[in-house]
Amino acid sequence: MVRQQRTIAEAFTLAGRGLHTGKAVELTFKPAAPDTGIRFVRTDLERPVEIPANVGRVSKRSAPSRNTSLTQGNTVIHTVEHLLAACYGLRIDNLRIEISADEPPEPEDGNYQFFVKPFNKVGMVSQGSPCDVLEIDTPVTYRNGDVEIVALPSETFRVSFTIQYANKHIGTQYASFEVTPEVFEKEISPARTFILAEDVEKLRETGMIKGGSLNNAIVFGENGLVNKEPMRFADECVRHKVLDLLGDLALLGVPLKGHVHAVKSGHMSNIRFVNELWRFKENKMRDRASLEAGQWDINLIQQIMPHRYPFLLVDKILELEDRKRVVGIKNVTINEPFFAGHFPGHAIMPAVLIIEAMAQAGGVMLLNTVDNPKNYLVYFTRIDKARFRKPVLPGDQLRFELEMVALKMRVCKMQGYAYVGDDLVAEAELLANIVER
Image (cartoon, rainbow, N blue to C red):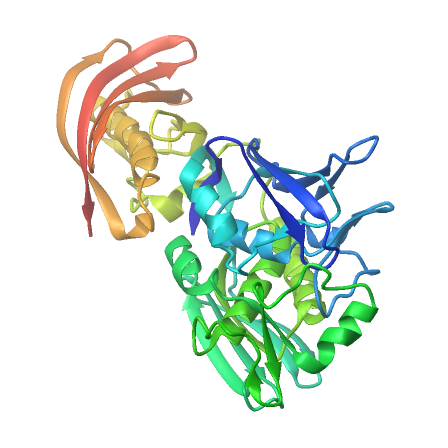
């Protein structure tokens, strides 16, 4: 599974009050470059402090059973999980968040579309660089008593959660979602945080939930729901637990492909599980050669393109500007099967295969305009103005540069050029359709 990294299209600002600190706070969200990740910047300090949102920055001095906080030296940002859940649910990979206090705002009504709607309003943009997705191919498990979280192989990213409370008005609840931006917005983000009435005063005495109220949280007493507003979902409590887990999973720094199932988990166990995933990720990365930022190696190309030996004719993508431009290479060796007959004793790469390789580079760009590219094929429908200027020989490295001329629905036109070094060896206009398999 592979996709492009994403950031927001333009900056925007939100304001409110923190859930636990109760402090007035302003957030300014700004686009960030590929491979930046999500970073908070405390702008209220004399010297601004930047804190990356990764599991290595989780504060051990916070109250991990009630929230997740990040730290950099003596600087702390509390209760980041709800905001990070929105980023993870909407597939935002790179973001700069300037924050004027030590806790993001909590929605006044407890509905986390407070974050989702402005993100959707400004829109997200694909950035060309590949986004490494952590694929779970063997189970990853954390257990502590009756708390369990396990990640299992799956063709999609799914989160399931089971909660069990002695309070009969909560009881046992189960929810399971294939997490997409649409599902997060409609099914998960409206779910409010919840608390037992007996815990309210205890938490206030410890300096927490200063910004909490019956407007933004669900409170359960012995006789049932204390709030006047009814439940938004019959299983709203477990949905909020899914949201919390997504926010903690965001600290992994990469999207997941797998099924995460949690039982009776809270922030402390979530973070310990993310640490297990982090070690799993590090082990997988050691087995993979490093690439320069923004490049797509043959392993990633094979996750997008349906072609295989002997007809996969692109070895690496050097640049990809979403829906605009792609640069790819093909290393031409004497071992190419077509040289056996084209021509014995005078090996020349067939012109038609130069165009095919050029088209495959364009196909990578096209298939990156759809979700789940494995479900689609690119059919080239026309080749115009093809010109072949110099022969391509064993030992040459072909560099293809293609620009998107037009893209309407799933029909596109591209202008392509093929170079060996600085020499233009071929060019053509290519027309293609993206079709379902």
